[in-house]
Image (cartoon, rainbow, N blue to C red; front, side, top):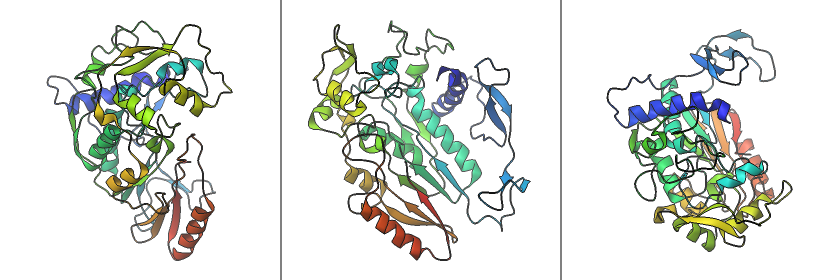
Length: 364
């Protein structure tokens, strides 16, 4: 993960400087794409650099080789849409997190990410890039939140719809595992570790403006949008943990760590609801960290639930119909699920889409 960090920090710092109105800093224009430049490891040293852009490759058949390069004539393209996925807009300061499990490897390898304080800025940089493409629609295919929290949803909607984005939570300023004073070398600490970016996590908490997506956007639910850490169904105990003042720093001495064959959902649940001995510290509380239900998610996204799932059909232009399938489990676990009722609905909608290209979107 750290090998990609240098370029990611550049992208995010552009968003921080531009969004927070920093003066006297040179910032590259937002909104580039792989048509203009790519990310490569040119010399094989494990550090990522910028590479040349890649042209569009036109295929006359989905399973065939490219027939030519360059954008197709407008008459040949049935639709132009953009897919954004797994943005994981997160409250990295939330106590309802278990980043220390990352040192155990899989299945806990996603409990900490070195760039996690920058999720709001990176997502907003993506919005700038998408707007330059002027698509007819944007499909956000799940995990736009990280831990089903209300303040994460507030941030996502401000980014996608446009408005004031407030990444910070708890007390003003950063309070988390990437502080310079944290002695644990597991975590990337921008003030002290390479690549050094002093003050980065503090600046990442500052509010800024997002232009919002200029095209309509279609939400798709993923496991992180409805489950705590994408693994555990919300409970009263977990809600208290998220809104409270206790955060877990590590397992208590003598406590056996879960192994690679452990049920990751059960391991996370046991830690957060206090069934495992841990070493804790106090952090600022924030009631905005409450968990949102699928019903509230659907209401705020402006899409009604169908049999408790966010399944719906939407037209993209005049020639394409999108079918959105909600595959996120409600009982816990990161794997997807599709019910027989959803399959029946999908078949009916495909039959109704006669004369249109039909694209099915789901997170899993």
